Image (cartoon, rainbow, N blue to C red; front, side, top):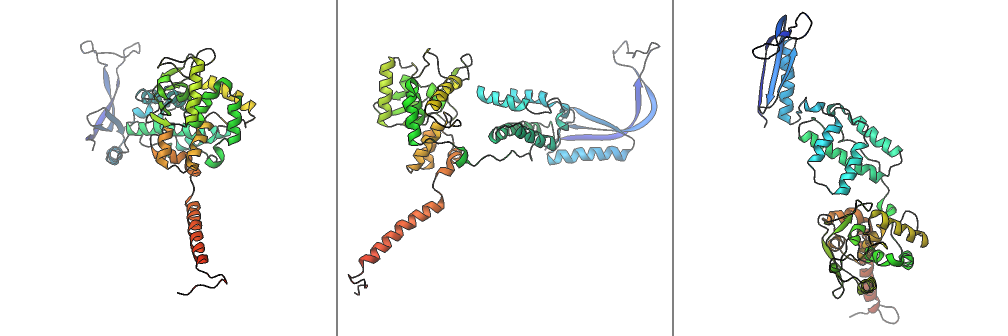
Length: 403
């Protein structure tokens, strides 16, 4: 519990002492500002938390001063106290403080920065931001046409920033706690999966980008993970692909190689047909060094979000796929195939490189058979066995046998 020292006592207000020219006078010995009594007596209430900065206010009566101290005491005891001086800090200034203590990837930092700049209360003091303002911002983002998932992501980061301010005693309460993001489409409708025919058509027109598409579709790699593959990562005899790095960036200047997402390092067991495709690719491209990248652009550059996206948009057009089918849909298709084949949650989690099974369930739970489906299937098998056994107990004239 925080240590609180407080007092309330009478105090005669003073005012700065000024010279004939109106300037404030200073003591020549101490350098302190000189003052004089005003004759007005008030009650000065003061308190200090954990030996920190002293907070002072003047009141016309002792009762009012004590009431103010009691409010501060109650807030400290309940853990809802916030430094009134710190609360004057603007949202923009607090965001800088908060971000300086975070460890994020470059892409996450960019997402957070966009979210922090999108709010309309940038110059407003933290203690003055109201819950209604946060919810109104969410509504305005929706009216602008932003996808529910995008708004939800931005709101999550804004809520994180406010929670940190509460934890640091900048504000007593989080004004974003009750804010709600718009509901998105159901996962079984929003998630795009490629049919066998669509995937075959995509590979048919992919040309030099065909092996890249294949490792996304048949090994479930993310775009950046596929772009980061090196010769040493593939074992063509054991039919495995090791995910040890990823490429981040949206342009040539910003492209860099970084470790994969936390928990995403993994070995993916792939079909021999994919290994053979990669073997042909390695031989055709003359890739010999262990640290040589498997996939590069015709100009020899690493693939990033933009140039890989350009390749996929070309493939999507030539294969006549819907415009909302992204390259990431190949990873979703890979996952759906594992689930359809009867793989359990942990198996799918490890293949996809999710840090927790809960992440896999959150994204793909709608693809697993429901309890009702399992009950119906299990009972149908059981019922078939029972009826077959009953039929075998009957005589040719359809009468039950008697032992």
